[in-house]
Image (cartoon, rainbow, N blue to C red; front, side, top):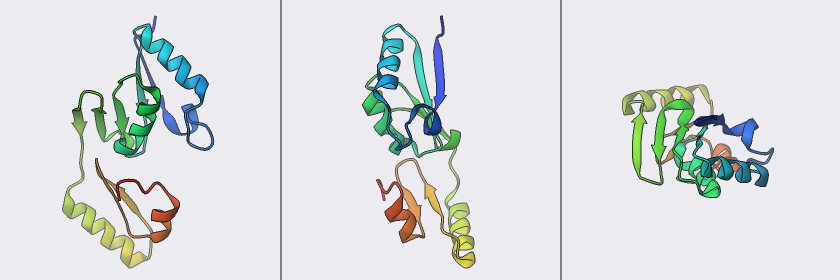
Length: 127
């Protein structure tokens, strides 16, 4: 029997609108009740991905931010964070501004953008 299932979210367990289908929720809950650990993995900010975990309601950790974080919101444990330093973020934002390139940067609890379109058209929770 499997002890752990790690799965990507976007394009894998989420439907085309970014929601967890009822079938996935049911299967994951059943696997959890059998002792199989579920580990969602996403490029999204882990604080935004928390919505998936709330929907699953199984208390599992999540790998977020393209692998830069590992957190269990159920227990409050943050096992791993690989952060970019503030100077690098500011330099990146400055380069994007000079090139006229929209960008969005995520931290563990916020996101920053230089584009009204990205802010209004994307996930804007935490801004």
